[in-house]
Image 1 (cartoon, rainbow, N blue to C red):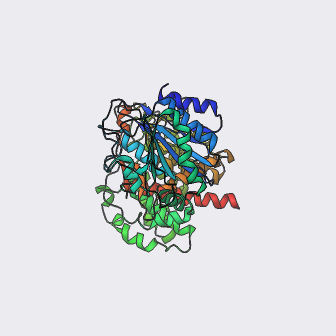
Image 2: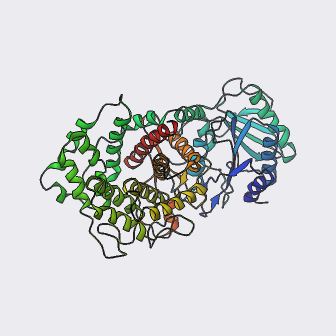
Image 3: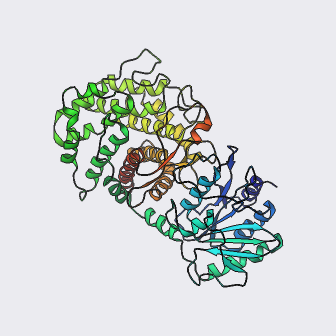
Amino acid sequence: MNTESVFHTLLHDHPGEFESYPVGINEMEASIPGIAHVDYHTTKTVHRVAVVGGISSVGPGTEMFLAALKHISQTFANLSLIACYIDFAHPKDSGLQPPEIDKFYFNNQQPESPYLWRWLTMGSPDFVIEICESNKVSIETSGFAPNSMDHQEHFSDLDDAGGFLSIIAMGEGDTPGLIPVVRLTCPQSNIKSEIDSIIEPLVTNQVKPSPARIELSKRESRTPLEVATTLGKRYGHKLDQPINYTQGVAISGRLRLSALDNSYPDPTEELVDLLNFLQTPNWFEKNKCSGANLAALCWADDLWRNTNNKNWKNILLKAADVFQEPPDGCAPDPCDPEFRCEDMFYISAIQGRAFQITGDNKYSEMTSNFLLQAETQQENGLFWHSRETPYFWGRGNGFAALGFAEALTYLPQGHSKTQEILQIHKKHLKCLLDFQLPSGMWSQLINFDGSYQELSSTCMIGYALARGIRLGWLDSEFIPALRKSWNAVSKRIDGQANLVDVCTGTGVQARMQDYFYRKAENGYDDRGGSMSLWFATEIEQCYRTLKS
């Protein structure tokens, strides 16, 4: 029995109890399978445990690993688990090593390490059990509070200084907090009794949630408005030259936050001072005029309304007029002639606002024509990155969802092409629901199991869901996915607005595998901060609408 068969057996034998939860990608560029109880990522009060094999140099046999998972599931009703088995493509004497923090996710020497690290730390179980197979019985522990485990003769401290699980048990590195670890080594014949000897005292003593779990629960308990306020303190305070949407969206987000929360200081005067350079002579001609630069002005209509200064309106219209009417079937300059997904957002954000301000149909026609003529949506509902890039990039599909949502916001219901655009959009979102991970996230490559869980795509898709539900073109079937996505995003934003795993700037890639190795940014990131702030303010409005 191979590792994949272990999880297939559990899914087959326990329908409705488990769901597939892939871990990552190994050095052979194949998916690392994993599994989760269906209630693991919910807010239900249960003890959470991660069961892992293969991390140390000696792993259990797959039959033993399956027996362990079945026994835990059948014996401990109030225990919810995630599980994975790292089956190295090539033997490694020293086992899995902690990842290099600045190399998420392109460690060619041991790619399994950053994937499993993030899968475990963001899963934040109350404790981890590693299962190893040997003729000798031993139980090593680390990270537990005193007296939380029964002291037995074969218990000892985890002898793995600097190893993968030791670092997790110490709460070091890029993690929300420490997670206690138990390493169980025994023959297969002892697996059930030894698991009982570990788990029963923990359950009996009502083991407390791990510090990592406490931190994630704290993040998850915040309201969208509270998260938006945290983000608004750090993002939306600059607009570097050449201007770019990665910062402009956050400026828009701060204006939206102020409109939602009377206690948040009105940033209008501050933003006018920040943005006055845009009103200087010849500024526009000196700036780059790609779609990404033009979309940086997505706040201009709000600032115009707040100040009654028509210069901000005129700057927006000047940006909209950069887009040139193309021949039929072609993309307007400066859009990519191959109809990149990014341009779906860029053009909709600016042309849509220009149409709202002026009522001039040239803007609505340019938006609708671009979206309908792109022809990058496939039969499965997902979008290629571009006509010549047949890969379902996560943020690319986020851009598509966001672009269609922006277009539908501004196109009038009676517009001749609105229903066709809506039909494409719904098909896309319904397909995306099928690829949402148990955690609530979407991944770097939407349809490739194990590609990393990516923040910006999840924020953009979540935004599109919230906007559509709030404005009425999406019905209640999308609400559970929206709530899951918000819970996932909120866990990846800490109290200082540091973020987890935002794909770095990415153009079209030559190979599907090239998307695997795009660096994931952590901590401060303009792109992720902007989209998180938009998502937070939009879902706050959506929740208010649902309550009314």
